[in-house]
Length: 402
Ligand SMILES: C[S@@+](CC[C@H](N)C(=O)[O-])C[C@H]1O[C@@H](n2cnc3c(N)ncnc32)[C@H](O)[C@@H]1O
Image (cartoon, rainbow, N blue to C red; front, side):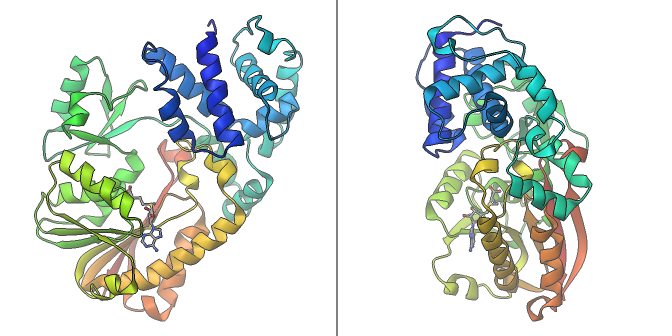
């Protein structure tokens, strides 16, 4: 593979913003990729994948390159050199690479690979936490979380079928496969930008990981029900739930952020979904009004996001132990408060995209042992581990109210 100057520079510029200005990787890349209209799919793929790779392996690469943050441009080129060398790509004779030694990179890689926190490129505290919470399983899970994520679509069954969409995409040379056990999913055989297709613009599908698609399935909302998605965000799961309700009944989508709910409304219009009503949680009254009112409540709780590191590798560097303590306290509060919206005989789903027991089964166990949870029983609990499923890590529990 021959390296092209403008693609490498675009990668270095993106890394500079992500590492040194604390910008979010996906937003940075969205902007970078707009820079040159002549870039084709391969060029764009190179910039995005190389940037994500170097973000993912930041700790390992900076140990090999012997550079420390904040990274100046020569140091960013050194990180790039490590990436290129480990991927068998020859370093060109540009002046930016003049003093980036390529000797010893492979030797240091082998040496550091013996130690998990370097091999898996994670902060010390995260390695200790994973070991403490998951024991022996941590090794396999963190390795799986460092793989590149597949792109999975969720077919909008209000507008098309899995087979029809598969054929429509095949006509555009976008090859997909059906995933056994995930009735609405199609997996792309090769990564690609599907957002520019008419099928996406016409709301025939959303991009949604296979594990995430399990949440609405377990909630199992039926047409005509009143359902509350209490932490709806931009509506990934709300759209799926409303689709399963066939646009009949009422889905109340809530969040503390209005801008996320506005994005949800935009997506709902594209999907031809009409039964979602959004409510911003701007006071406790919003919840109180709905006590004992819903057939089903989903708490897709804010969490560490450790289960989705594949798609969000910069979270490794942005997460802090103090944030985790805070988020666990929030999860407890949400379980205690939002569960009140389930009507007698109704059901609650508590889900996270984390693989840590302290955010998952231990939260539910704690809830069931408190006064607030006394009317609930646990019907089922799915811990989706990335090493086994090949998709995101998720926790999904289903509880029944008396
Ligand atoms: C895991 S995300 C939700 C993802 C969303 N359900 C989806 O499928 O796209 C958690 C959401 O909880 C929201 N949140 C945080 N604190 C909250 C609170 N106290 N009450 C309700 N929502 C909250 C966040 O803004 C975020 O959108």
